[in-house]
Length: 319
Image 1 (tube, one colour):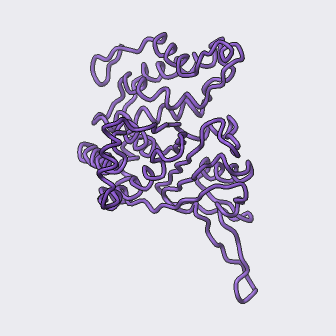
Image 2 (cartoon, rainbow, N blue to C red):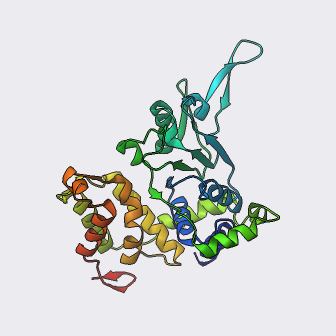
Image 3 (cartoon, one colour):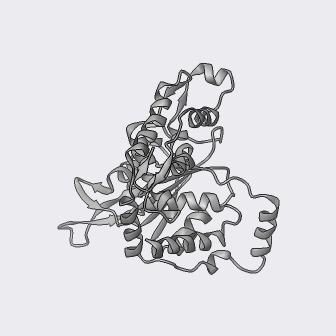
């Protein structure tokens, strides 16, 4: 595991050449990739969402495609279609941009619900079905979707059932002053993306994902995760809590976090570190919470304080 952990650190170093000052977000994106999850990047335009995806594709040798979603984009523009061949006796499949390792769905909330559903179906099943013919997408496969924040003109926000398909929702945010100065300097005479070096091959990514699956989880960690999730469902200020799909996503993110920390076992801090990234977009507040200006972020912080984590003694023993 040690050698692969070193490669993961090198991947983050390469992406950090381009997305300066955002190492925490870079780490969480890589965590989601290794956990076989999909990532929703919700932020304002121009903060580096597309650049982040391109940097990962280059450092990890992922075949990538990008589609700018607009109101006139159709499901066939995503998944592909069949066309009559020149002889007129059979149909040929013209694959859509989704048939790649890393698909960047830019401004997913600017297209129709029908097109959104076509994309999210592929995310869930890992397969593309066109005219009753099903094809597997390449492996590894990850979708990075960007979404404008609430209030942007001409957008159609994803419903809760579709948001639940994303393992995490992350926000890059604006850079601090020092990082923004470095961005200006770095882009004076070259594009930092040109300096990103490939670190791993496709089979190495699959091996890393396999190692993440094998990370040890003690029964007390399972209980800790379940208690946190159940608190989101039982809280008097929350209308909709974390789903069972969200619980599984949290578990996978936690194991990937342990892997990136150089461990083959999970500790409670791993759970606390990614809990909000997995849970925030799955929560719907009740009206009385919104009226009193109580945010999802605050409620999740309260839950983390309320649920006591188990204490670690050794790798195989937690109390």
